[in-house]
Amino acid sequence: MSLVMQAVYMFTLAQLVVAGPLAFCVIPAPVIKSSTPIQNVTSNFPWAIRRDGGGGGTIAGKHIVNFADTTTSNPEAFRKLGFLPFASNSIAIAGEDGMHVTDTGVGKYVGVKQMWPFATSKSPINGETREENKLNHRYAIWPNTNIVSACGGACGFTVSNVLDITISPYAENFLYSTLAKITIGNEGPTVKREAVALWYKYETNYGEYGLARARDGSNDIFLFAAPEKSFGMKVARVCETEIADKTKYLFWNGKTWAKNPPGALDSTANIFQYNEGGFGPGTGDIFWNKHLNTWISVFNDEMSAYSMFRLMYSTTGNILGPWSEKPIDAYKPFSCGDNKSNLLCSVPYNYGTHAYPDIDTTGKTLLLSWTYDGQQTMFSTIEFE
Image (tube, rainbow, N blue to C red):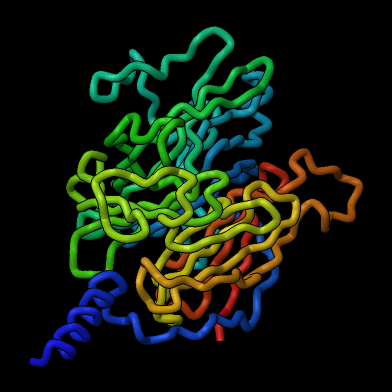
């Protein structure tokens, strides 16, 4: 082989190593064909349930959805207890359409069961008791991330933020994220916190934005992060069996997978860039779409009053991109600005925006959800051409 041909070969091979075998196949931009009317989440409980958060996944063939603060509007419980049953978080098993869920009840006066355990003296986790409630304080675990299938489909991993919330005055203080392993048995979902504290507030919170399985034949899981003012998406990877040990993680720094994470504001380490009016990606999901034959990311802006589902996609089919330079406006959800009634919203913006690709594994349609008015989960399904 001539020196010139060797040079060309080595350059091409280097490109494939970084970008993958689809590097030279340009993926066309997704086109949204239609959307369905809005529906509210419905539960098997006879009472209304107020909750926020979101993020789903499939475990043991069942689709489950994570929720954060959950209040069961049970009038009998209110008469007996003087308050409505409340849980810091909950998990529901969804039906085929993803919008009708089965909740698990607990207690003499039935409310939705809290699923994520706290590390206290009554329920220590790996010897940890740091989440004991203090005077005028309480802890909260607010899941708002998808669940990635693992254990050959028998379990799932997800990440949630743990916060210290003062009761009076109300304020929230992010402490750290926690990694959980979820299984499903005869009594419903069970949450085991594999790492009580995974990432602290001074670290980039990999996994907070979402998790996904690698598609390169490895047993790795990708964990995504969208740090505030980073205006883009970062990614780490780790073998499934070592996901609770962050010393085993590799981080994409814009050039290679490295042992040390890039700086939170290092935009060169982003797999895609996004800045819309000073807002970066808010809550959302990254996943492989079979119909589009590429990775896509669907999200809302960070707590923006202007509510819109944005879509970014890999133009090569590789997780590292290149990705689309501009977002696609995928769906305009109902928001408080659209509310023409006399009922004022207590929270003026939508949040907890998520996509549920497991509901239609063909990828032709995509179920979306968002939290409206801080307490109501709404759904709509978009269809791609």
